[in-house]
Length: 547
Image (cartoon, rainbow, N blue to C red; front, side):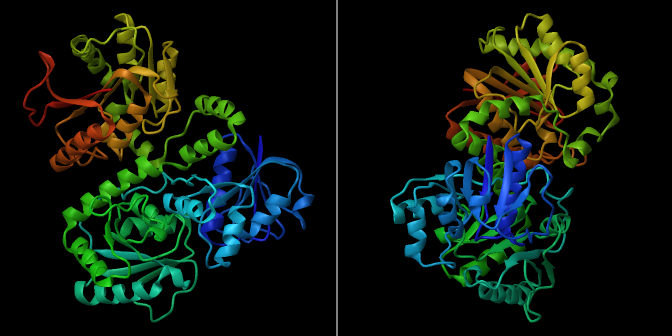
């Protein structure tokens, strides 16, 4: 199937809107969809180049383009040409902002009533469109760059930096940033940095300005900033706070729905939110985060986890787009993903290299065999049949899988992110796939048992992995995650301190209640297997989830 993004009368320039369209097009092409970007003028976007499989097609009139299955209006100005184009199968209007700055409300609402299928990138925008036009509007988010925007390698006690997005557009409220930056520098003695697509005035109270930075420069900025201030009052889904949040920034957010942050800025849980125009309250939030590192770290960890779970990756969101609007392509896309050997991200690659024993099969061949007997005792206690399909997450070379098959388990499948491990397991005739634990491509409810040992401490967001496990679990099924109660800040990407493990436990209890599943915590005894007991440092923790 073929899709085109219509930029006629909208244009492609250096701005966040064009970037979102281009990245979405690239992801759809990666998933196997034929994609084009249409415009009447040349591409002026210079932040990165479109790949060859996403052609930027320039035609004086939209009617000069060829037929497509789906044509997407990318802004209010491109609605009329999208409606008029007769060689389309389906017309969509992706509302990525309520463009009251571009045209009167009446004209904007008329575009919503044009007959195109409406989709908005945030909850508030979808509600606003439906309320003003009476036309149903679905939510399709662009997704996040998981695996690219990551927390810094170590969260050291560095001087506090307050960051924000600068823009001269009135709805971005640069005047509020100016006041809060000046006060933060004077009363808190902290540095202030801005990200901007335009020149920043010389008298603006910022110590550093990143103007149209490269992707690496922007990531470096986000990883160094501790607190992100978001003052805008009119967005679709406001992206910079989410990008900062993926890099371990705590968020201070303007608490009006039209700011485009209500999908992720939850007061006291994922952000500190200030009431409309209340700069005194905003400064109080900034001061609290600047002075209390422990609270700032906890808030930023919850923020990032919320983004991973609730906003998700670009791939996940574009798969959702295909499912909703291109159902004929869904099956082929799923097959194509399942066949691909996904390369590890840089963070995952460092994981694979962190210790020789992890890469050396001889160094890890004994422990999986030793785990089988206590695993089977636990399954017997939980009355789990050997006919239930098992997923081994982080299967390495498949030793544990092989032992289960020898003992009569009928179906055992493994996943890992290390291609040598996968190749070794496959050479033994085992069914293994190269996949991330927090984003597999298996259908929902595929497994009766999901097992991992020493996986959760090696991912940046263990709760995101458990959430994916629950998606894959059949009704009545069991998830078993084992990890050490011996935090190692050098080798472990998460659960690296006793406090982090305690926080994870509390979050799991809350997660279990929200998802209406049973959860059990076990200690580990080498002689007796897994038994409920007081867990001591140096032992193992077992978390069992029953759906």
